[in-house]
Amino acid sequence: MTKLLIATNNKGKVEEIQDLLKELDIKLVTPADLGLKLNVVEDGKTYAENAEKKAVAFASASGLISLADDSGLEVDTLSGAPGLYSARYLPKPTATDADRRAYLLKNLQNKPRPWTAHFHAAIAIAGPGQPIQFAQGQCDGEIIPEERGTGGFGYDPIFFFPELGRTMAELDMDEKNRLSHRARAIINARPVLKKIFD
View (spheres, rainbow, N blue to C red):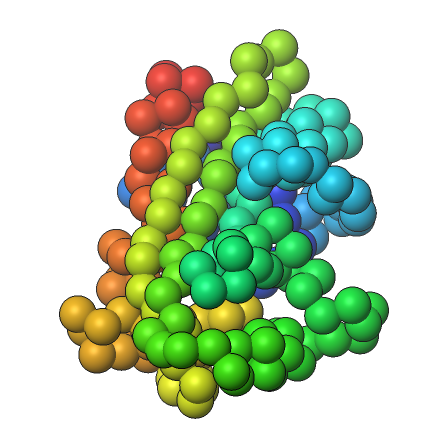
């Protein structure tokens, strides 16, 4: 069976991507499975550039076709921040997801609600002798001032879907993997993967 490397060390992302690709006849492996430790500097100007950097680095190091994503939360009233810097929004090396959520809410305190926002994801697929291919996904919602739910990671507990009356962190894996930005990007990437692995 052909292997696909999920090019991330983020356990939450690995679980989501594994679930989204479980129906494909591909063996999914992680950097941990291979004992691969890479720290890719994400200094691209777009999500696609950062995803490409990660996919290429992991493909080069492993010799396997690699799938990487880069994603971010964009809040309209903050001119699209934190955006590309979502994972590094709080300039403190030891900052946790909870610290970043608290920092975002602090920056929104004096802004009028609703705090409309969207998550954006870009997927890059790279491999030895393969052209790099991309897929994108987005989901829309708003930021709420109180955390709700225990699922997911990152900004999920404060990202609210008004039409569902729930946050991303209140969705189960099946629901999240129908609605999330990463889910939509992976769904758009499936035909690419099928073509590569067929």
